[in-house]
Amino acid sequence: MKLGIFGGSFDPIHLGHIKIAAAAYSQFALDKVIFSPLNSTWDKKTKPKASPENRVKMCRIAIEKYDFFEISCADIKRGGITRSINTVNDIITDNKNNCFIYLIIGEDSAYQINQWNQSKDLLLKAKIIVAPREVKKRGIINESFNLIDIDKIGISSSTIRENIKKNKNWEQYVDPNVFKYILKNKVYK
Image (cartoon, rainbow, N blue to C red):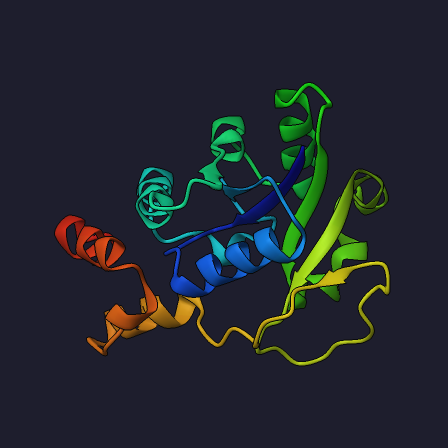
């Protein structure tokens, strides 16, 4: 089984995330893509604004119409700082080593993956799929990484949160049901 793991804060999950996961699924013949909301980033300055429960609920809402997407709450259950190697190890264990892992990351992360915790072990256990993003080029991306063939994603969760804060339009960036959930539950107020 070929599994794509798409980790992130998903604070909130937006249509760019869905577009990336769907493109990875189809372009790399994945059996499924697992969204894995992180518990806490290694950089404490970028702590998620929404609670883990709200982020998981928003992910569930955003992916409910796709039978090839699912969610793993392993990072949140584990607690502490989320490391990609732990997520990969958990999913390999959950699937009894009967899977081939593809880790889906943004272009910004592709430039710094060699600095990640246990990156050598991670690169042995997972093939890397890179989603193009609107970021400054910071070197050369490893030639063994697979690039998703889509336009650069110009949406970011931080921009959505900023638009919410400033009462600017943001509805078009998220699934309509995620939009309703955020408003109803006052997730970012």
